[in-house]
Length: 314
Image 1 (spheres, rainbow, N blue to C red):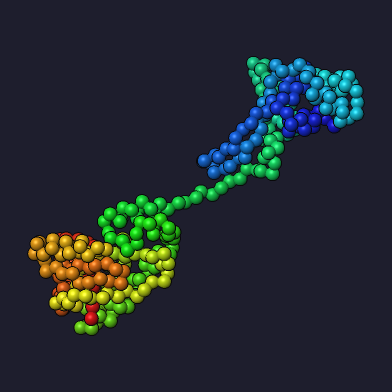
Image 2 (image 1 turned 90 degrees about the horizontal axis):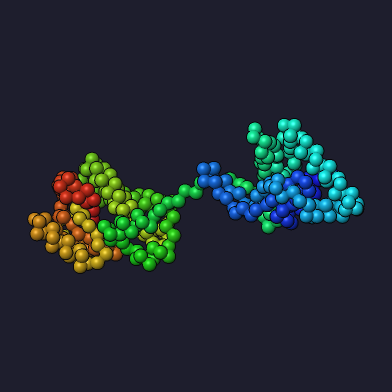
């Protein structure tokens, strides 16, 4: 059995294995490494190096080989010295000395000994069974910052504490938005009976605007798939059934302030009650005729707010 086999065995247990009259193979702990460009993970290992200055016999390799092959110390030392002499001859003749599972030695143009370690074997016993692997890139969605930013602009039915305890899965939110939009579309379809063209126009407008406001306000509870039917409970009688919504507020005091501000600006604003989400709704104005309401809505969207939308009730 060759001398390199015994060097390999000793590298598992020792940090320095000296080949008499040749040099020493050294090992140093190397932490786990993650190469970001390739997403490749390498476990902790022993990094091998070579020092030709450490060539004095320390007895480790000779004793280990003598015991393994049941030979005398003197006989084994003589064999190792002959092997080292042959290695030196090959290097000086220009050959590259390959030591299996350890590395490769050669002389450069200046006659200096060079060493390239082999990465075939991990000599760190604590990493036994671990191998390098490539991990796919993880795509993360940053939702919390977006929700906090929206909360400053739009009232929420959920509290910040509930949001911290709830996992908002994007695909569930999208499913809820679709269900709400469909429910709203079916309800609004029953509201308009004047003419077929007017009924279709109002339905499309209501579906688009309601979906947009639901997305921006993120009206979701902890079980978003079990959604109530979208209904509005009017607690204050207004002069029309078609309402141009200016906003929905969690606190009624804020809704009253909005009504006051709009009236000071010349609008026939009104508080029309609480919807099924517990939000207090305020209108720019209300109309008996759906076509007039749509004309007013387009004016509001152009001059006041793109978030305005129309709600029709029986």
